Length: 248
Image (cartoon, rainbow, N blue to C red; front, side, top):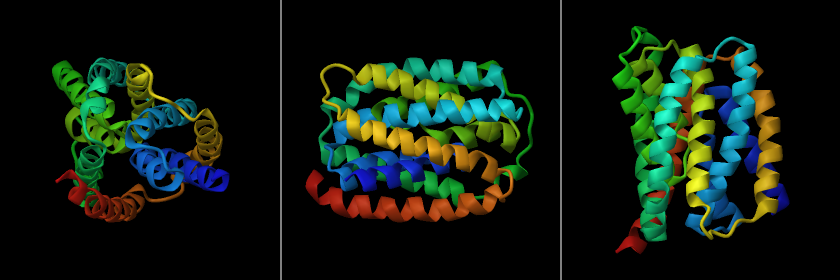
């Protein structure tokens, strides 16, 4: 169990460091299928794990000058409000339905990742209302499904807000940390947590993040995004096959 937790945590941190997201899309399935936690517990734990890893990654991106503070605070501030408000909703949803919804989100994310490269978009500053509205939408997803929203945040920051890809990746990490913190607080009302598992994921994840951020400077983000998009879609199909029959 410890070995699985450490390996999963490292993979989650690595994807966060490399792509500015993706760790959260792996954390809930890893906690449910590898560690054996129920979905509601996994949602809460994932917010703590991804939040800590993201704040470390954001600090590293800040040192490299790829973090836009203004956008992060506006986008993330709106997301925190929505994430906290939506956190209680997941407790009223059946576990199988929660995982099926998670899988559908993964299919959408995978499709976006395999679509036209985000680098081809024009980078023009967006209006304040677009930044706030985008943050609210991502915050709702974070609170309900326990994901930091990295693979929703990066496309939103590029296509809606107008940030270049390098800034979107760095800025998304701070937004993820903010959303995750709000969602985690919203879930703290009696949900049991395995602090040993959370600690193992965080420690291994920090190692992955420290390795991923500098590695991202040497690799082509579009190639990594396509490969990870295929992986996310394959995992989504597995989750749908396993959980849809249980919904009915």
